[in-house]
Image (cartoon, rainbow, N blue to C red; front, side, top):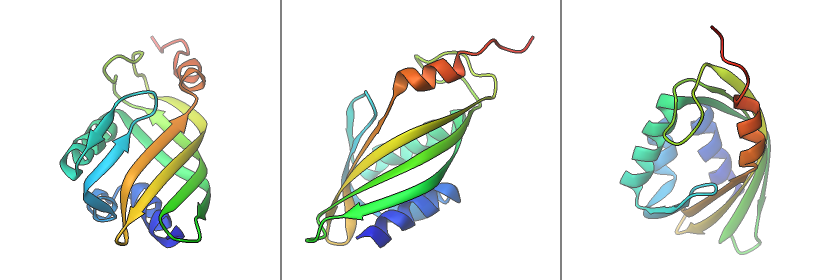
Length: 135
């Protein structure tokens, strides 16, 4: 199942949202970092649209681990990003760049990802994007 997770992140880096969504089950659960849980591929599609509007990100240094039974996987990577447009409840965007270590956990069912859970240090991200804004 590590190939599935690698495909998911390759699609993410290519901004190929349809291929990324094709890796997911219709009823996928998405646990957002320090946020709520969303259910379903359409909710995930809406999340990607929100992310695309406000952020440009790339996964680097990807390491994927999978359980022997193929039902669980995890990934550790570094996200390199730019904060392009202000996101609701977040500081004002001005193209700030950031680099964050991220951990992600997956449940796999019938060859597709049925749960995505992401973790990163939100305070670290906030400290990076709260730089003085350009005049």
